Amino acid sequence: MAYYYVEYDTVQAFLSCANQNCCHVPGGALDILANVRTKYTDDPILMSIVANREGICSQLYSAASAPAVTPTPEKVRPTPTPGE
Image 1 (cartoon, rainbow, N blue to C red):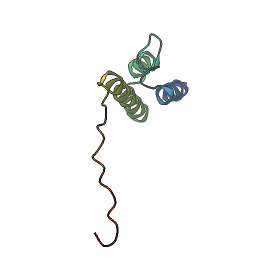
Image 2: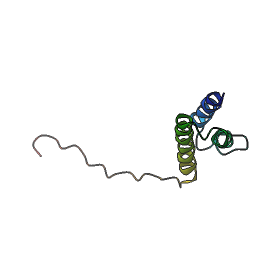
Image 3: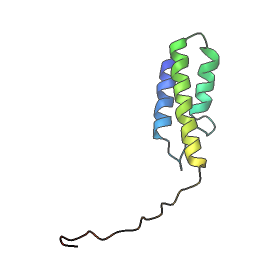
């Protein structure tokens, strides 16, 4: 049964984006992963999956809280023509 919860969290984590993060809401992926971690600490495979999904959520959270970077345009040089 725990594997179904982890798969559900996988979908939540991968469908999350910076403006709609399903990981950090009440009842979201991190809450469910915490419950799975508490109940199935003796299952090393399940715990590695949980750790991976927590990492995905952490990366999403970091990306959402990072300031937006505005690229600066490079100077455009004209293409040289033959004989120049």
